[in-house]
Length: 120
Image (tube, rainbow, N blue to C red; front, side):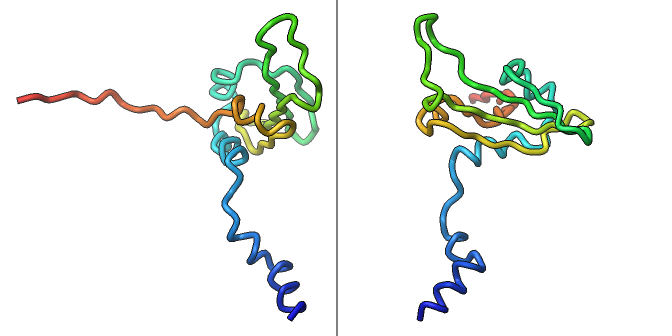
């Protein structure tokens, strides 16, 4: 019986039943977007790292709401996007305090065309 359970776990069948993490899903919505569009909504990254091979990491953290507020490093949300040489977002990951990230991480905004209301 235990070999059957081990086989299921090793093939990932049990993992497939778990719903995707809401934060990771939000981060993943930015994949394929141009860097300019990312920076329009997230701002300029607080930290950038050149990783070679045309890849660059862009790190975002929430800004303190007041000058007195200094968040403890464990309570800070970090979002890192990987951008390739063409300026396209190729990866993303969040880390840090989950509740802080739930407030900070946003999805790609939906561009809704204006609807014309017709009345008779």
